[in-house]
Length: 441
Ligand code: FES
Ligand SMILES: [Fe+2]
Image (cartoon, rainbow, N blue to C red; front, side, top):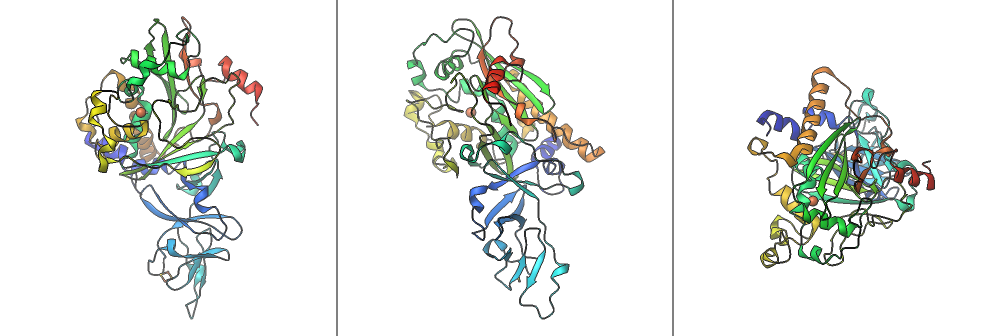
């Protein structure tokens, strides 16, 4: 449970709010590179942290991210003409370059361009995403490289999903491994053959799903790190071994979910505004798994199609939302009594039902937290502490610098006495093997 005041601090992200100020100290995804693919091509609308912006690629290929409203009399620059090194408002023809400087006022008898400057945020393209930094210039830190800086262009892949609730709510589901034993259950798991991988080591993805089902009372252990925390969901397998799913959470909203044997695919949650959220799901590093284990970054099961577009090398796109609150997330009450625990057809719709129906901004004075919520609690505490320290003492936020390429999720059936904290780190033999096979640039 949080106080009403802490819940407000945690969830509100507009200009002038403590959490808004914290988020503005990090490089955040603004839009997909694909949305502004062409020099002098159509601009893209961007709404980020409650601010309305326009992105455009100028004649030279530079990207501008500027406030949407024309400073003359307020018309939207989204409808502007992108031409000859700038974006021109079509109301009276004022024109702005990528830095936000006014460069032409074709309707004015006595132009005063040099006096007109609109808000413009620095951008950096990486991994198929246009990232931006919206904080004070003097506090700007280098772009945080999770591996996308050296990712070959043909291996960059991003899927963006829009979720209609507060950003923290959406992220809560990412650090909550307990729910997979309930929300994501369906009967076809019973058909998964025992392939013998219920032994210390790396199980198949399908066996892993059996373990979720077998033990719904996961023990959650959280380990603080320089970037945030890692946590393990520990379950007992049918043969009595301990199965660990380890996910990593990085300030202010990036999660790498558990996968076999380890994972570097990143989910970045970013607030469009207080009640709308983007989830960018992106490749950060070349696949470097010498054992060919683990399968897809987030699994599909042939008898239970996962409607997320196939994640691969086929470029960037928005994820379709076939199931929303408007159609009760595709709820099938017959399936709910039979083959599917939730009655909702696919994983992401199940997650969206759970997080969106708590309301646009969930009132955490009403929650009752238990033993499986410790990672969620840790995340809220870390965010609140950092936002308050920044506001009250100007303390530099955590994890604005570091080697973000070394952060990984992991999953394994533990050897007796094995410490899950090593799994997925640079000290994990499987990671060492992968790095030896494909050294980091
Ligand atoms: S409102 Fe944009 S030029 Fe007049
Ligand atoms: Fe989920």
